[in-house]
Length: 452
Ligand code: SAH
Ligand code: SF4
Ligand code: F3S
Image 1: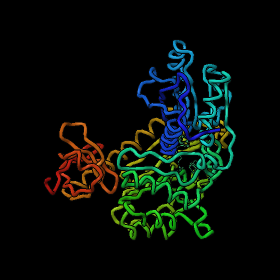
Image 2: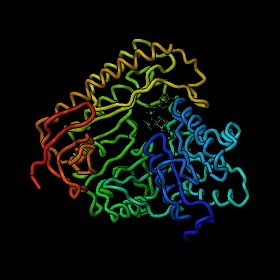
Image 3: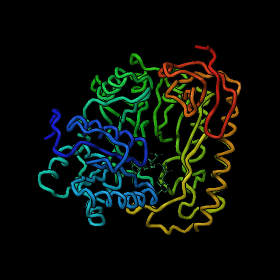
Image 4: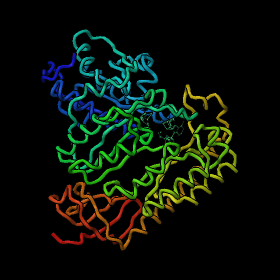
């Protein structure tokens, strides 16, 4: 059983954790650290060679992500040859998908676990020390894990709270519903309690996380089901919260109330990641995205009516099976019509077990490459224009940390752009007006309006 008392196991003092994938994995990794620190008092180290326990939190959304896991594991194998007592664990979405196959391919891996079972880590580590067994734990019990996690620790001014797990959308190309399981929302009170803990620890900005956060349907304190908009009004009302964000949203779960919330809730920041994948109606249908391009345009119009400064970002896939030049032209048309501040663009990668993987991956690699480059070039242009539009404005910047240059501080604008300016470390956590003077590719340069 997991006990709250620190009981350092002999020879286990240090933990190294490597995280791949989405923000939900980042959140899970930070909770694994909380858990291992609470259970064993382990110290987190930044070099794997210093670690008694090495954990990898993995992603299997594209083939490349999965391959990285095995190449990284090769490095750890060498470390373990020198120190056979070292414990190596592979968690996350590759852990879930591959299960014991990982240990067949890499027998020096001691533990395999999935995104829903990491709360059992201390127990598994314990057993390995006692019995020297290999363990694999990839069942999907409801979301009991949240009931077993300690208080979150907060680093910095921003915190993350996972409000729902899994995905029921089953887009034809995507592995997430298989690795993370069914969509389950945490109860409203649990979400609020975790947000309060972060705020008490000094966080001023909270991001709510889930694969489809806006599909949230959790039990409220009144015993009724609350939707996402109700939840964000409640979170926004928490004392001490200055900024609220959320990711990722699905177009099918956008409601007029949520669009309106962007105009009504001052803490809700004008930035939305709303993946569309393609601009072709034919492919949107083939992918089972559940909406057409006109619906996407309508949603964007509605959002911009309530929040004219909203920065939009999105995800795109090029080279989905059967994608024609005409389909791709529709994607480019959508991008130009909407105008994004940023986007993640991917080449289609067949994932084992998904419906799309049964179709012929028939867009030639060089065509995928060419389309990706065309899309990226357009995105760079749009991102650059979005940055340039900020020059001359005075924006509220949440000061996050020292910048790379001596005497610089770094913060974020409401629409999530990075700003560097001359400032002082004691300004961390404050929201300060900054005049934007210059735009670079990935960041802005500004000057504090009020000196000192
Ligand atoms: N839940 C989010 C995103 C999940 S995965 C959503 O529905 O929008 C993040 C992104 O990875 C997806 O939006 C998609 O663009 C990309 N992706 C997922 N599976 C992929 C695959 N098989 N090949 C290429 N890109 C993929
Ligand atoms: Fe994957 Fe689609 Fe679910 Fe997003 S909504 S996680 S793309 S299945
Ligand atoms: Fe990757 Fe799993 Fe997140 S597949 S994108 S780590 S949900």
